[in-house]
Image (cartoon, rainbow, N blue to C red; front, side):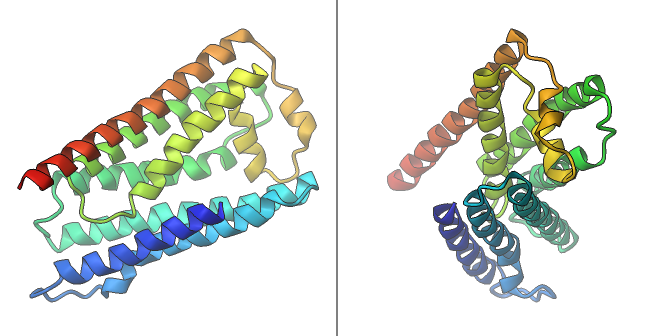
Length: 240
C-alpha cells in the first residue's frame, strides 16, 4: 500500500506539470497545483489503509479503513469537479474523453458511499443491491477506460479506474474462495457497529463462485485492454 501511495504521488506531480503545460498562453482561475489534489488525497488514503492493515483488532481496523474510503470518495469527487471545471472553460484537450471521465468519476463517487446508505437489515435486500452495485461498478470502469483510451491528458482518473479493477478482482476472488457474497463487507466498512456475525448471516452457495469468476474476468479483461492500448500507443509514438 505504501508502494501504491508512492506511485499515486508521482501521478499527482505529473498532473501538476501537465496542467502547467496545457495552461501555457491561457488564463485560468484554477491554479495548476489544484490538479494534483485528487491524487494527493488518494495517496494519503493509501498510507492510512496501510497502517490500518497492521491492526489486528477487527473493530479498529475497520474504522481506519473507513477513513481511507472517505478519502478515496473525496478523490473521486474532486476529480469530477476538475473535469467539470474544464468543461466550463471549453478546453479543446478534453471532449469525449472528458465526458466519459466525468460520468465515470461521478458514478464511482456514488458507488463508494452507496453501501453506507442502504437498508442492511435484510440479507435479500443487501444481496440485490450488491448485484446492482457491481453492474454499475463495471459501467464506471468501462467509462473511465474509454476516457483513458481517448487520450485524457490527466492521470487522476486512473486511480478510480484502478480502484474499480481492484474491487472487481479482489471481491470476485473473495466470492470464489468463500462461496459467499462479498458486498456485505463493503456495507460493514460503512456500518462500523456491525460485527463478523453480520457477514455470517449471508448464505453460502456455489452460485457466488460463478458470480465471482465473472467479476474477476471483467477486471482482468480491463487490464488486458489497457495494456494492449498502451503498447499500441507507444508503438505509434515511436514510429512518429
